[in-house]
Image (tube, rainbow, N blue to C red; front, side, top):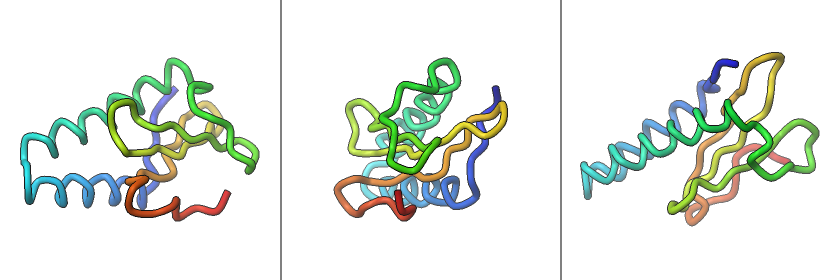
Length: 95
């Protein structure tokens, strides 16, 4: 199983890291790495997140952070649909 990042999810990850890096560069690198590591963990256990009302979509709060991944299985791949800071806004995607 491969991890596919939707273009918008990848841009969100980059923006999130850039924003944090303005204030704390080491934390930005650590949090970005944690988000990527969590996505890799989902490959081993795709049912780890909570099922959303929209069939096939799941949500996982990244432990020890306020960041959330929205993802789905697509064929034999895991697609990260969205990354967001739960303190700042709701998911862009409607579920």
